[in-house]
Image (tube, one colour):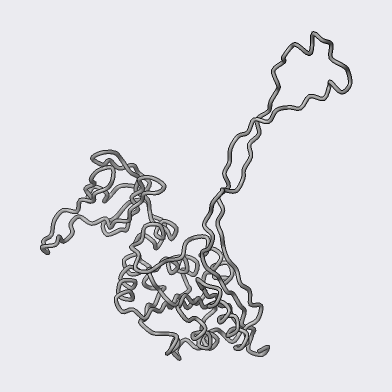
Length: 310
């Protein structure tokens, strides 16, 4: 029940983030025992780069506390979608915070929204959707892979989010989202190998008052097919975006102060032979890095007008 709302104390069964360094975090379940490879129940001891942790010692500890490891220490944090994205078990490639924040903004997701997502994958984006639409909204998420669907459903229930999400196994490109969702969605998100095949079903699923759609594509050829299909099915305001995160390099520079007094008065021979230290001032500056990630993926966003305007 770690994701359902703010908590102060770790309870048994909670999902906990073990924070070692900014680049080294682990997600563990606060349980006393686990099964080993011989199917025997043993005490849960989690191994890290800074030593071992008896997980049973976490139960009853306040979130944010520092816990002792055998070779150092770590902090225990309550998980949120940002931390979960950095530590989740990868079943597929996932989207990260820069793209996800743009998706949530462009789809105008808010509490009470009904959102359709395909495919579920590792559930990274799903957790962001659920945080945005709770407590009264609902997420319908689809994936064609049976094992991924079962694992995602299990995670959502364990995280206390099961009441706001429905996970279904379905090939939406061929069979759509189901007649029961026609005219119910405020927004649709597609992350599929051939998203243009699912766009006709997305148009049926959006409400009569209209709605928004977003598709993630890794290559421009796929994006072009999506744009053409969106226009064909009555979508308007089609736009294509790419989110690139640039980390500015900040450093201090010493800049010499230019002296122009010599232009007013001529120096004597004695002054010419005398060397005076040059004055300098310190400035904090920033510049773009020499190298950076060049491509993430394309986000194609469009609006479906109300029924009377189509």
